[in-house]
Length: 254
Image (tube, rainbow, N blue to C red; front, side, top):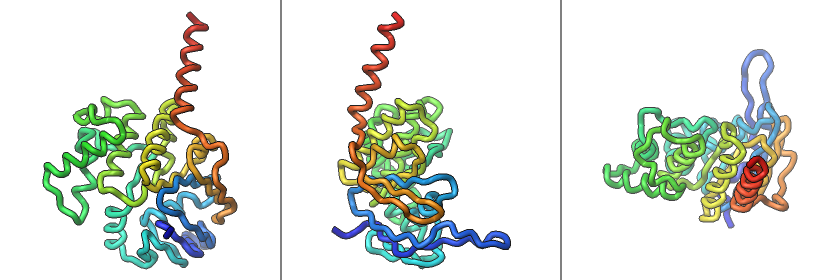
């Protein structure tokens, strides 16, 4: 099976001040279609820089990056923007929803900036399908301040799905959520991954990484560990445990 992401000896060096910062040092990596990968590491390990490179938000100083067979290493800024819009969906820690825009309208946004033009009806239908996938079709007309944190993140995931991307990149998607809501969101990711969507997620939380299939760990800009996850968490099972614990706690205090 061909890799949807293939990076070969990628380096990223920032020339800021007198001493260059070598943020990523010779990382080589294949990620195949349908994988669910956690990208981990301490602050300063290079994981955010690598995520920016994978998301075509930045270009490597040297090395090669093939995204779905396309060498994106040397594309110019406009070409990178086209690739991002066509191939990649982004989910952020802070949701990044427009406050005065409904869940449906937020989900439609990526379609407005793509090369492929859609009618208003097509955009609405596609956005509704995306919201249905994440279980929020009944909240399409709600504004972000009418939604819980977990619901807002699910809208953000629906927005990332709007252009049917090859890959979802999620940057600390549970960072602003409580434990129960984090499990709910990981359940959405697991269901999407079961449908064949490739997901790469930055996280510093070991328990969240256990919902993924594969864990990559960076240290000082180098890939130091690449392992399949043993005893992987199942979000449905973990949610059932949480609900049972809540019920037991209520009975104890009653």
